[in-house]
Amino acid sequence: MKLIAEITDKEILGTDGLSSAVPRYTARAIVKNGDLYAVMYAEKFNLYSLPGGGVDECEDIITALKREILEETGCTCGKITDLGIVKENRARADYTQCSYYYVVEVDSIGKPQLTEAEKNNKTELQWHTLSDVITLINAFIPITYQQQYLKARDVAALNDYITNYIFVGSAPSKSDAIFVVGGSLPEAAELAAKLYVKKHADKIIIGGKFSVKRDCFSLPKYETEYDFYKDILLKNGVNEIDIYGEKGSGYTKQNAEFAKRVVDEKDLSISKALIVCKSFHAKRCLLLYQMYFPNVDFIVVTFDGLDISKENWYQTEYGRERVMEEIKKIEEQTDL
Image (cartoon, rainbow, N blue to C red):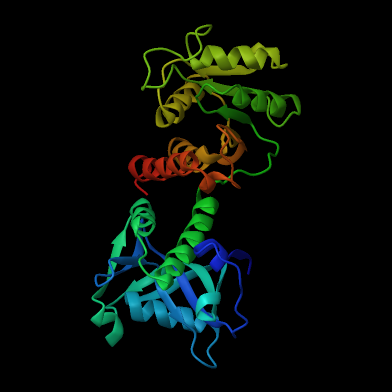
């Protein structure tokens, strides 16, 4: 299993030093039940955390995971997917811990079986949307040294999960068409043109009026996103007869909806297609285009727009805001 993070007193306290203590092992999970996620709330500390706990002696990690999830949430585990390992080295406490994180899809739901300590802390299971879980865990303000580590490890695991969830781009392959999601970044049309020239597809479907947040397109030379994209495509070697599109859509869901109208009106045969978009926009684009083209096999090909990438999104406030915005819009626009 991959290493997600290694947390030390350097990150928590800004001090050097490492413990050589034998590690304690734990099994933890991001637990999903449809579009809701499990979170444990300890009222005594106003602490939100992901489910999980220690591995007993002579117990393997997966057995411990299933036991902990059953005890804390009352759920039996269905599909279990590796997420990664978070290592803690608490030098000040001369303590180390290795937490194995998984993504668990619930098989059945029962009643939690909390320990006396958990009951004394007034711990309860809650189910929230992904965006709410992220907000609750990140908003917690640790008071103690231990709480700082508790938050840091769950935040690291969540960030890794979010990265895998949002950034779904992959390598292109031979397809019937290229869809370019509306916007004002030239990289989108430039990438689509490169894919066309390399013969990944022989037609490109562009679209967009301008954002519903604006009264006009952001670049005065062009009236619409369609005009902007078309100009870039032509300058980069795309034959005009292979360019299709519309000038009416104002946001991503409309991009997909209106693109479907174009495909139907032009009677275009598409069974496999590429979607070109910003990397942090990839998941939402894929889900929305799949809604309107349920019989098309899509591959998302991305570029890193607005200085936000799979590797750095969580390192800046702006990156975190844009990714969180994507998660919320996915929940609102796709009923997921």
